[in-house]
Amino acid sequence: MYRAIYDTALVHTNPEAAHHAAMIAIGAAGNVEPTRRSLAATIGRRGPTVTNPRLLVFPRPFPGVPGLAAGMDKNATAVLGMDALGFGFVEVGTVTALAQPGNEAPRLWRHPDMEGLRNRMGFNNDGARVVGERLRRLRSSPQGRAVVVGANIGKSRATPLEDAAADYATSTRHLARWADYIVVNVSSPNTPGLRALQDAEALAPILRTVREEATRATGREVPLLVKIAPDLTDEQVVEVAELARAERLAGVAATNTTIAHDLGPGGLSGAPLRERVLEVVGILRRALGSRGVIMASGGIFAAEHGRAFLDSGADLLTAYTAFVYEGPSWPGRMNRVLG
Ligand SMILES: Cc1cc2nc3c(=O)[nH]c(=O)nc-3n(C[C@H](O)[C@H](O)[C@H](O)COP(=O)(O)O)c2cc1C
Image (cartoon, rainbow, N blue to C red):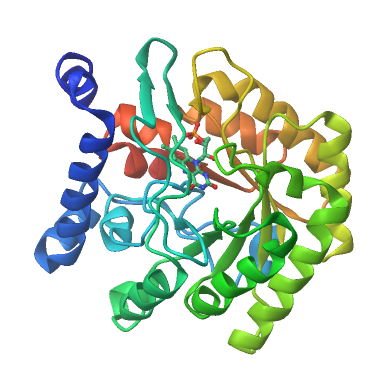
């Protein structure tokens, strides 16, 4: 039903305006208790809690394998609504130390023929202090405390690359206390130079700084993941896995959007990513061995896609593009099938 409405009507709307309208609606639905409850009991109904020993690095069990990928709820305004729709967890962000407007519009395009989206948003977000305060308020209610929330952090555009570690540390200080895990995003194609931070020499000091800051801010070990691009070579993927082991990361998030396309500016998400992400997940699992969580994203639309990622070695899945194309009943449906 939603897909028919999408294909005939929604596809003609401005993509960013549609995004804002959806976020307001989902945010409002989550904040009105009877609506939240009825959504959670109907379309958002989930399967049983996930039992996977690798996930014991996280502070508590995941209520589902498929979660909301970073980039949709950048400012943590719709966490309860996303949870009510049946996502197993919600990754907010990317959040940067400094609030920033992102790139000028247009910066989001649909490619429905290939089940893809293309974006050059450029980390538009309210900044770590404001998002941290929003998460603090979320965590002050029992419903808000119950949601598994990840905080995805990136570098502010105004911060030079050589000061990246301090920028990530500032975000960590504001967010770590309220997060079940932190993702260090060094793979967005829309912040100049950011992807150079995937290089082990640049990445190691950032990961160390974030880990120390997270422990200082919370008094506990906060599970840390690094999010990589699908455009790394196989050798570079192995290097990241080795670094993840050496730095005792909880795991790796694979992958962000790809720049390997000729459709125009920005990174491409959705179905065109699927094949490469499947390969990257396999490479990571072989390099990581039996330890280390892999959180996979890239074109997961159907249960069979999710299963293929899990069979290749992923432990958790996140999605953005399928949620846009398939609509509000998609997270619960996937969660009931995949657990
Ligand atoms: C419009 C848009 C904005 C995104 N913003 C972010 C972001 O801020 N941080 C991030 O780590 N990933 C971001 N992503 C990437 C997604 O989190 C995800 O890794 C990628 O889209 C692949 O998953 P998908 O095919 O299910 O969309 C964004 C993706 C889209 C489509």
